[in-house]
Image (cartoon, rainbow, N blue to C red; front, side, top):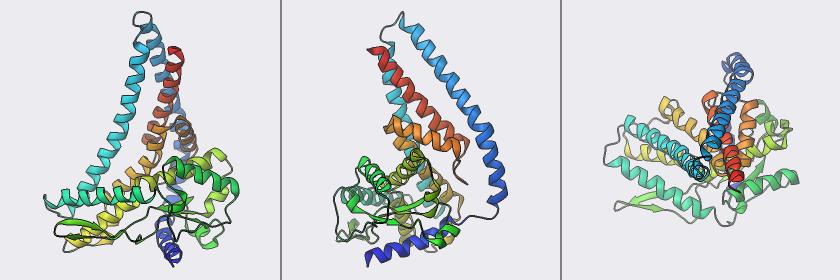
Length: 333
């Protein structure tokens, strides 16, 4: 039954990925400019910047032997700064949504507390195997192993979410341009005597990752790993829980909640954009291998309607920083 409800939810979510007609020409031109002009220019800039930084560091090392360690510490601080900036942007985006929907000053912090506690429990829930979980057996062994590795790398027990193979679904092939769709487990909740009560018996929606037809067109193993890492990060960060909690808070605490208006608002689009950035930036900050894969993938494809030059520049910067860190560690030996 729970698997059926997940499939029903998947079909509902798939409508979000339908290709908008106006994208067809605009995005084709946009893509050519992005790939053939912007990406090479950003790569050149990042390369020059890295070479200058390395040259200055090497020159300084002749008079300051501690410069290599100081640069390493600075890089670690830079990674933290990048992550904190994206988390701060997310917080401000959520706050903006609440304020636009006229939640009062005392209610907004309570809604953030609800979101925090839901995600804290969700993280604990995904650390262990759960009953009623289904994994389709039609997924190729290599792809299944890669997905399992990605989930475990994010401290997600693969047996806590449904893994669904929809790569041969003809309807989705025509309607959906995503490679995969994911959702973290979501539990019902209520407020009793001013305190959050999470209904922990079983999720209202089981978490899932559904592999879609477009994934079959990917011929690069590196790009497959980048895509799966992106999707697993959405589950790890519980972006769907964030969106679900926002909707639920507005539904319960406002008088004229309009979900269609919410989903079409610039504030909501901005939040989703931040989530897509996080799905690629956060794993890149943790692993140089992933940073390289993400940069390589985004050099080939922008994210239609979401991620363009600014995002690629950020991924490129992170990748170059990892390379500089490797060079610094080599100098320390």
